[in-house]
Length: 90
Image 1 (cartoon, rainbow, N blue to C red):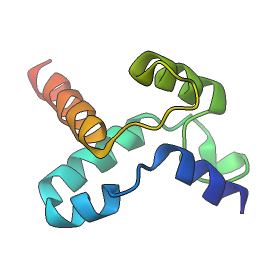
Image 2 (tube, rainbow, N blue to C red):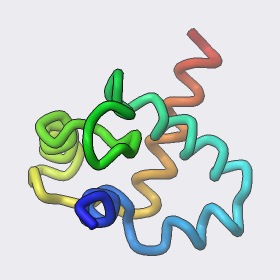
Image 3 (tube, rainbow, N blue to C red):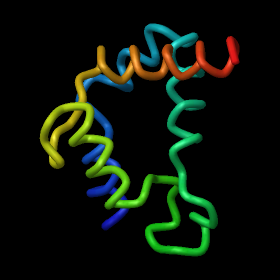
Image 4 (cartoon, rainbow, N blue to C red):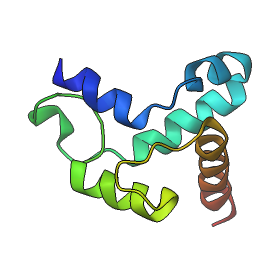
């Protein structure tokens, strides 16, 4: 159950629908999310590849100005596309 609470914190409402409608973005979003996972995530509860709480709060503070903020779908897509561009142009 704790895993579901964690997932809801960083999964904006409507993101799954966007990923279904735009499969290219889905791949991009999953790849970007995968890069945020902590090393050894499978050894610690909730056994999901989700970012560390402190790291996530820092990222949300820098992205939204609120440590408890949740990015919009558009912000998630833009960040994932930017991340992909950085890895392909680097």
